Amino acid sequence: MRTVVIASLLLIMVSCAEISIPTSFPTSIPTGSKPLTTAEITEGLKEALKVGAKNSTGLASQTDGFFKNPQLFIPFPSEAEKVKNTLIKAGFTKQVDEFTLTLNRAAEKATEKALPIFVDAITSMTISDAMGILKGEDNAATEYLKRTTSSQLQTAFKPIARDAINKVNLTSYWEPLATNYNRITLLTGGKAVNPNLEDYVTQKAIDGLFILIAKEEKNIRENPAARVTDILKRVFANTK
View 1: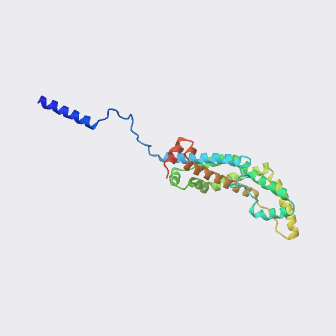
View 2: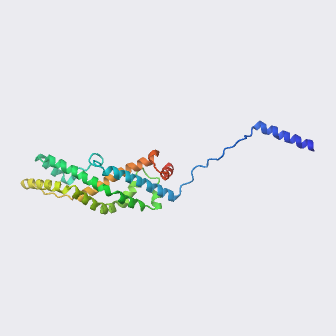
View 3: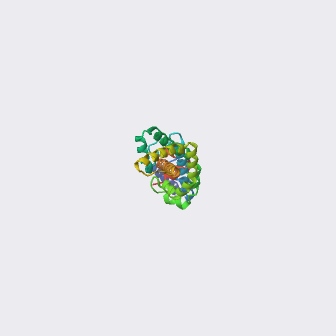
């Protein structure tokens, strides 16, 4: 019996040698990333919007942030375009240029205080909202923010625009232009104009910020280097 056992052990040893059983093993086995929780997804999307809002307001509020950015530049109000054309023909080109510059300066000034408004709106995003836009388009979160907060932003932003207009004396440029135009129209029988600059600057400033925020969001979604926090890396590495 002993001889049979020894023979069997020798046979097993030979077989093991032939199949080359490894003598060392990895210290750990990769398990992959854990599934994202809904809370992490919400946090990631909020973080993306906060990063985008911070970068966007920083760009928009600097000198020439609107004036020298073709995407954000605020032109003469469309309803006052005839004012511009008439005044230029009448020799008021310098005043028209100064007015346009100051119009953009007002928007730049207003956006200095826009970030807290956006942050408050971003923090109101719910888990269901976040899950609904996780797989959306490159600007899905931005569109959600625009859709759900535009009216609040209008209400909150208009006083800032009004203050900015006053600080840069925008009305002091507009009133002489409007007065000169209206004086000219007395001779031609044209209609006097008085566009609401507060509404105009407010809407244009908000539109400009959303343009920049959408670009920031797209960048974060597509460019790993733009994901400046761990949660952004985790969320957007698992989208699409």
